[in-house]
Amino acid sequence: MATLFVVATPIGNLEDMSPRAARVLAESPVVAAESLARAKKLLAHLGLGGKWLISCREANRRQAAGKVLEALGEGKDVALISDAGTPGLSDPGQAVVEEVAKLGYRISPVAGPSALATALSVAGIKQAPFVFLGFLPAKPGARRKLLEQAGTLGWSLVAYEAPHRLAQAAEDLGEVLGERPVVVCRELTKLHEEILRSSCAELAGRLDPDKLRGEVTLVIGPGPAQGPDLDEVQRLVDEGLEAGELKPSALARQVAGTTGLGREEVYQIILESREQAKQYGDEAVIQGDSSAEEPQERRLLVANSLGLHARAAAKITEAVSRFACQVTLHKGEVEADASSVLSILGLDAPRGSQVVARAEGPQAREALDALDKLFAGLFGEGR
Image 1 (cartoon, one colour):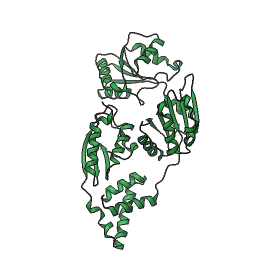
Image 2: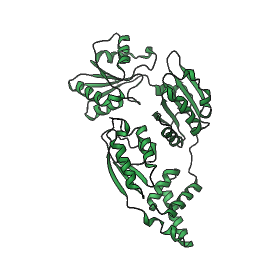
Image 3: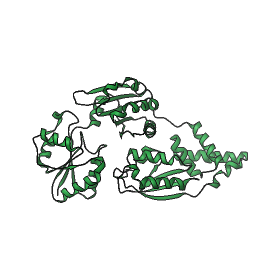
């Protein structure tokens, strides 16, 4: 059976090319590459030619996967490479690997350089555990929301960022993550390599506008995990019971998602609050949940080629935040809070997945309609 080789290539310095990677490229008649121009340059450096080159860019990844499958079906080995580093980490190669895996072809990694691992190795920051965020969302609101949610974990964070957005991202890092340490790794292994160490709060002021070029990896140090504010939990519970828009179970999910306290613990607080209300004769609180609408449910197809990745998840959280209801997403036995990017990413929902959206609250139907439109529109990715 033909094999798809996932080949790591240098992230800058061509001397980092491994002998095995060079051999696999030499022996594979087909090369799928994110950039044909860069692939030709690399192959020329290795003295290789006569390859069937398949363009695998973000805009055509579905067609690229089809061509790779065609080559494998003809018994031809395929070497998959990215612009730099290891394919499949926040680049179009991920979709190709997913499609090949579905059809049961052999997939073999050819290990080597990775901007993620390289940046972590020189950061000098506690790494375990860490969360890889991929490329930060381009929209400021979605970017800040992702940083806020990831920051509550207290873990180290690693992210890629485009150089033309680095200044804006630095402002958001300072606003959201404050004094947490950050290491900006730019042009790693290249001639103009730069490793800048700062705090998130000071980063924006330390960036040199003349150097905002080249590949950037951000390594953000750990911070204190933010425990739930019990006074805030009680306030939200009291407000929710008085409003009477959600059933206790839905209110518990909503407050748990907002504060980070466990849903069962929040539910217990709700029961205790209702019991106290009975003692003091507060009928508004006792009867408050009776007007909640019945839960709504909608089955959704993940049809975009990237699946529920960080940017898609951010769009989901933004969409549901506009409606007075609690929304959860379900894939098999896994449940995700639709207001949390990290929770949605935990669904691990690639293209072709079926996701069930459930909503409870007065605007449940409107929220599901918005999600239906978002999924059907491929999250604005056009593929």
